[in-house]
Amino acid sequence: MMNTSELCIPVAAVALDGVAPAVGDPVNFPVDATVVRTAGDKLYVRVTAAAGQPVDGVAGEPAAEQPEIAEPTEDAARTMGAAYDDQEEAIL
Image (cartoon, rainbow, N blue to C red; front, side):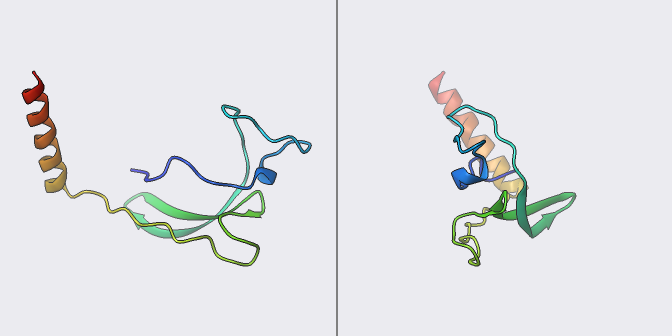
């Protein structure tokens, strides 16, 4: 399960002919990243640059540390599911 759905990148990494994309426009750009952990057949990466532009830092500086979110254990997932079921029953 992926933790983040947004990535803050420099406008220069995706601007076409000096024009920045608008909200809702699709963008495509190369990403530089470092593998920070593995889980089975999945890799988790920390993005360091987008289209050659440093992400969340200046040239030569590493990207800011992102908090690591642990995957829930099977027991924790079962407990969360049961709590959700109890809420649903209380509403009905």
